[in-house]
Image (cartoon, rainbow, N blue to C red):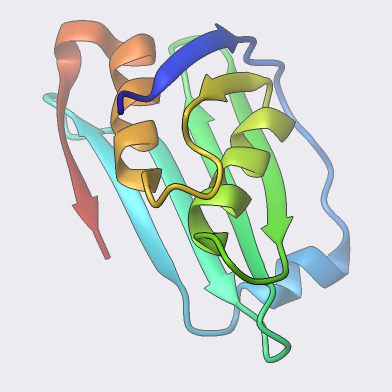
Length: 127
């Protein structure tokens, strides 16, 4: 199944609560899309809290505008990290089909990076 970008609207900035910022001091995973110029295009971070909730934060860096989004996923029976990343992209103004709960967060980061940077997209690394 292919991840599809439906819409991208980079809006500028968002303000974050102190609670959301403090969450990222825990162990986290990140996917970072890098351009041929060495700059970050997309960064998707996700972390699981003690109660099993997955929290995701995405940063999208365009040439003139950028966006930040936050998402979370709870429950059982699906891939929580991909659902949280999908919610974070949606919160950032990016609509993606065929992602939520399917374990395709890397494909989503790649698709958004290609939509933003085109031929400048080089690779996505996992850290």
